[in-house]
Image 1 (cartoon, rainbow, N blue to C red):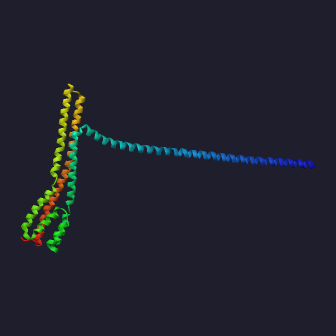
Image 2 (cartoon, one colour):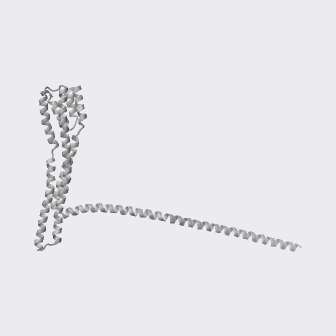
Image 3 (cartoon, rainbow, N blue to C red):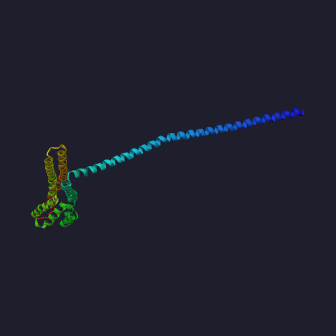
Length: 290
């Protein structure tokens, strides 16, 4: 009986132990499977992430390459334009191209100086007339002269000269205004003759270079003893470059010249209107004898 119970106990222990061991192994296997699955999932996720990021990185790299290529092409275009100008300048013979360039530089310098001077000479005429009239009413001639001293431009200078002759009569004032207006007009037109000279001189120098270049081309034909298209075409191309540059310089200077002339005409018209207003103010306030 005891042996039977002992055998039964041993069998039960072996059965439960085997079951526990199987369960434990199953749990371990399941854990391993889960861990492997997680590792595989993480690997797949990482792979997917890399695959997703790879196109974006490639796109960014492509964009950077495109931007650098565009910048390089723009820089190349800019450099090629400058180099093209230098090349054409050299092809046109610097001996004849340099005088044209000097005409352009000096003409531009004179034009810029005139534009600055004329802009500084331009004032608000209406405000200035109101200030002078108020000074005449409140302080007389000396107060009006102070306003003219503190104002810039030819109109203020003409007013000062006219007010300074107020004690000599209105006729003296009129003569002074007319005479000093001519002086101021001469100052406004200072340098215009030189600008017009360079406008005419630049294309003339270009034509001179063209004619001399054609003469050299024909001399080359005589030396070769035959009419070579390469020789003729090359000589004509070089000779015509001086004309092109001369015409470009003349066109640029002509634009500045016309702007300056129109600016002077506007200032002169304001001077004439202001001079008439000055005479009227002096008669109205009885600061000059008739």
